[in-house]
Image 1 (tube, rainbow, N blue to C red):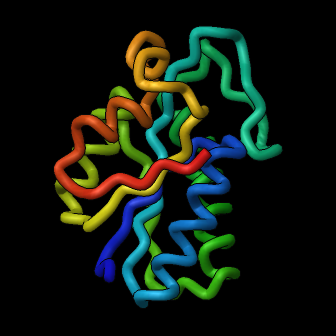
Image 2 (tube, helix red, strand yellow):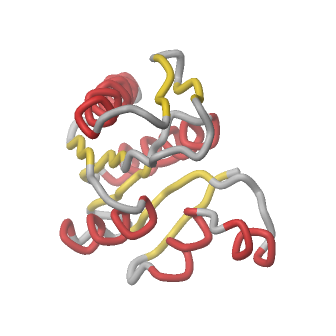
Length: 146
């Protein structure tokens, strides 16, 4: 039984799946759900995020935060549609894995739910996947969704 969960979202299909699972768990336990987005500066020109728009390498911190706010606002709406009543949204700064772990510690959540690309341990370690870093560094439970 969870009292509070953190779901890390980035607008990808994997994070949509993580949000769905986190909503089911939160609704089941009447737990508090923290939706967290940690904008990442991309190494390529642009990527589409949940149909909201593209985040480019040249975007200012303010632009990244504005896009992050759109992402978490949409996620909160989805959580409410799933019947989750206790929802908080957070846009945090910093390297995503560290920012997610730090936020989980500050909030004292029971578990972190996040999507992963399905890389194995060696690939995840070599490519530096966020889910791999969080899974191996978080002090609370971690659920990864493919």
